[in-house]
Length: 429
Image (cartoon, rainbow, N blue to C red):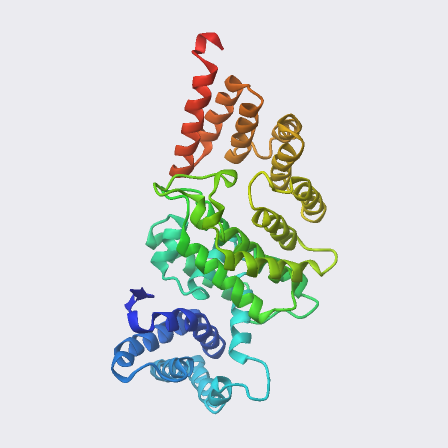
């Protein structure tokens, strides 16, 4: 196994957990992403060499931080310029603070290193950065993925991703993006960007937009881990709680989402005994907490929808009218064409395929989702249910044309073949 490029089997879990904490504190100290990453990597390399011999320290985070700080001082001392000398003085002046930062907080005081990590969240997810840059920075510097791993998540060459990360860090400096947690008055406007990054990461993991596999389990695990970090740091924020609940309730179905051959299995056809009961239970408890806030936020409402699905013992027992009502609330809170699409499918399940298709036809006429293959796939399935196979064939073909994921395309091709069989020869259509 490797972490950020080093073989680290005995202590991999420690490195993965400590990487974001370590880097966040170092960025605050030295004010430089590249230098912070360099000395953090050096500290982990030293741990890989020494821990298998000496054993994992009682406080591994403190060991890594001390090692990285010493390395930073050494590097800065060799840099012959005034700014570097000032940085050395800054680091050395904070030497006495190190113990206070890394000792357990017996007095119940704030977790300073945790606060550093929260600062890094908001730095990486600043609205001045492009959306893909926010996701890439978060995966690299908070989830602890290597540049190569982030590149695989974006399906781009490693060199391309390295350049994107460099540009994003340069933008942080050029735009003067502050390394701090927003004030109470700023937080409502900034927190959505942070949450959206974690949500985008999970969405890509749950339904990969491209490639052979439908799921990216490691990416899903990272998204959930990031959501847990945010929940630990901001436990009173209902939308943070709602996001974590949503991710757990959806991820609980992961093992049933594909069969043994890796083929897509729709929700109605999934073996619910394969759903993870621990994730369902934790997600349900969290969503109840998130819904206490009035009015509930978008992530809390989506989590509530997921909870209704997960609570149903069978597909037939799903409370579709309740789901429609929750989508109505979601439309009022966070309107979007995708919400309208999902609501139309829920209406079809609650009130029949004709009612759902009428809504989908209205949505298609608007054009906003014309290149969104789930719209055409949903139309095709409802046309199938209405015994209109020829029309379903047209919709399936459009969905296949737009679908970028091999596993999902294979599923749609099977549906297309079945619809073509029912529709008969082209001359009979």
